[in-house]
Length: 257
Image (cartoon, rainbow, N blue to C red; front, side):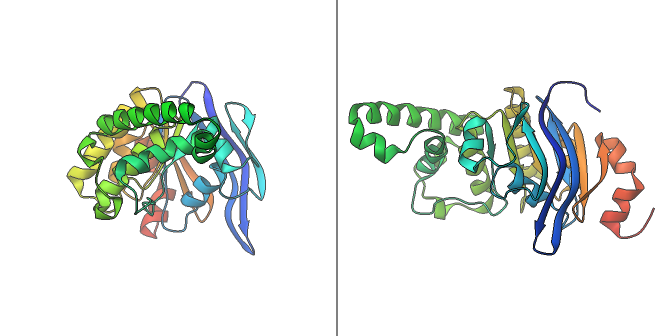
């Protein structure tokens, strides 16, 4: 196990949907300033784990601690304000807004309602608007997509949408960034560019959890990997340890090796 401060601790986490148990007694510790991979076959519970930790679904049982604070039943917007931000596998963006506006919306979620601010204090709103615009432009530059700023999001191809999602998640200055299939639909070179961006974000002091179906990508970018299958944690360790684990081979290939 990687030594260091635990930023996220998940204890005995269970999530049921009716009679289906999507997560079963999951225990995971995410160490601060690391890149932690989360992998598993389709239906393993990876996205459910993200949805419960980020507050979209309440846990059925178990506890989630972020920097030692119990966030198990806190609303998603409050979890975001505490320092957890995420992307979505579906590439969720607002299609009738520009890329810059989409990225700025990540900061508005973090701050108070912008419409209320405008009517109560228009001068303060204008100052805040300028600050958020500058922050969004810096994030776009950091991700190397400054030239996307004025494009409409419905004009973007899949790869570009994923990069904009990452930028929108970053603008709230998260301590923990959760990336759900950030290289889905990408080729080898595009995946390498995303891996490079993830490492750059991590070097800025952001802890990252990455979900991916791509074993090559996840072993390349992660320091520690947790493997789920049918909602159960079946393996955990360094990339080398996980790749050699017969339980992982069985889960992915359907037979013991």
